[in-house]
Image (cartoon, rainbow, N blue to C red):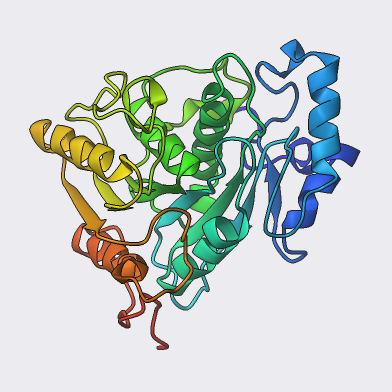
Length: 316
């Protein structure tokens, strides 16, 4: 490679607007800007919308992001004594209008670290860009996966064990990343874009907008979700009382099964929507432990640490 794809200085430099968004990131965490120069499609935004997003950025708080003009990811490396080489890109939810950066972002990263997994929390573009509001977040996620792969050797990440995990709209983004990795959604910007953006596994948790036309009220799966034998293995989590999202996840599981893709779905009776990593009396709170079991059984944890019932790693 002729250019430095491993987070060059130009990518890490933070502008005034992105400094506002940076308030959601812990001071001791590296924040990586995704795009070194122009961000795809942003030049087409009208001044009124840009002003709206800039105003929203000023409302950002540590656990909730209201506006993103400069997409990024925040790095949570696993402790050296337990790191097993796996990595996960974490996609918080928020209806593609905000980002639930706490219980669907940083808290998830800390849990992944406890089982030896490097985590990268994605701060993708919100609020929605029109007319295709799912495209900019998909561009951001694809770019983030490529940057992780570009840095894999440096961080001792196994390029065959990089997954994506997301909640609600972030779960929708996770499914899009897993089923549309062969689509070139933006023009390459540097050598990092030579790497694959196909995740090795995906974990959609209460994924939204999987119904026909992206409608959660639909009783059919969106036919635009093209599942085939190359689709990555999946672990799906949802509750039956979460509108039709339980039905959609079950239908997605059926499509994965038809295509011969290894998949596991956990449909719990109660829990609703938006629980993330929050504990409760509902059985759905056990999903992190079950997910860790699945990752281990699939070989994604490789030199994995023993698990407690609560899904966190045990001390060694």
